[in-house]
Length: 512
Image 1 (tube, rainbow, N blue to C red):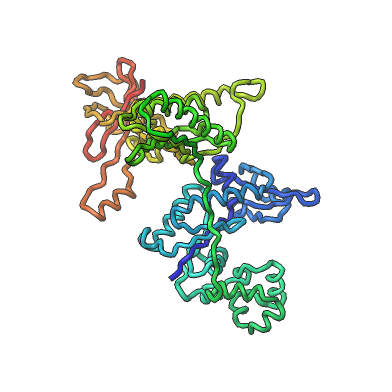
Image 2 (cartoon, helix red, strand yellow; image 1 turned 30 degrees about the horizontal axis):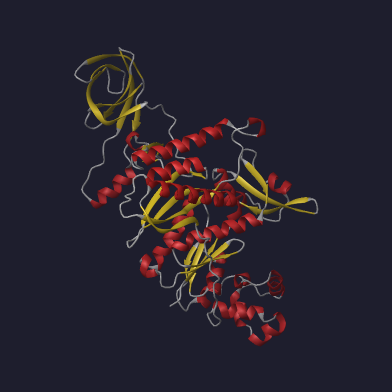
């Protein structure tokens, strides 16, 4: 049984702008087109639609509907950019099915027939697609059916954003929808409304001969495609092949000088191709052809896209120096497996628009790549915040080569110590009252006099996680903690917490 997906992105053009600008969901994006000297709305984001703004509205009218506190971005609409982004997104969805095609201007069609076995069911395929698109910041409506025409109509006009149409129930699913769900010409849709035909079920009730005589054969073709009478085929996307440069020798060689010179020429050719495409490499693969044996593959991952020959050559040469040449090499192939857009920029001459920040970022990326090459990707890490009110869960350590999250995590406004202990250290405290100021504290086998103490800050456990664990196992929710910032007699400020139920004290961090 054939199963297909139709994806519709209601705010695709504005979602692209939000993603490129890292705008917050509350920001309003309006894309305009100029008609007879007037600026009319071509696209608007979801936040603007909630305020009553619709495409075709005058820009001045749209601004009057928005409160002054909202951040507003207006740009000219560029359909060519939307088309390129839609094609790139379709190429990205090829991991779910080999048959993916853009449906301009704001849709994608996927044939998932036969892939249910790989993804363990149609429902899992849909969840994976929706989860991946949400990570990209794209709002999507989706429908699955046995025909593309029925899935197209249900995705755009159905009640639920994610609707599976059971096999052989396409007619029942389309019946309550408006006539536009058949993907007909807008003038034809207006002609149907003039005579009181507003839903698809009204069209199904008309004789086919009268429909063809009055409205043409187009709508009958759309009905037959929706019901599976006329087959519908896809023109799937084909992602561009990766850039590569190669040099094959007349015979195997184990001379380092020859391999060094050949790799230098091959990398220079690859960098020229990257320059012509205005791209930078993020993942480079070195393939070494060996006589009478399988080729050897070496991967290089860069922290930032780059096409700088000197920098990339230092990484390639370092990898080649570790290769065993006893069996000889008969060819070198360099392929850019992953690239990113890298437009030409002036970074050295301030008079021509160069900025020192761009120079620093480029130098930082080269330093990171060098450290990763020498120490390994798991040895070079960075710290990033995580949305959690618990101090020990409010950060995580990730590889420097891992892409940072597109939306930054919320960080609490409360003061936190510059050094947080991996394991809280036990202590004994003396206070006048339980919630009052601490007078002295015993810590690290010494009694310290406290000069200053702040009011306690109560931090509770993540009840939503522990309530789920309590249903699975017989576990108890950890007690709440009261945190105090204390200044010792030496001037050192420490962060101390007290468990409410056990009345035990711990030192959790210190300010340097």
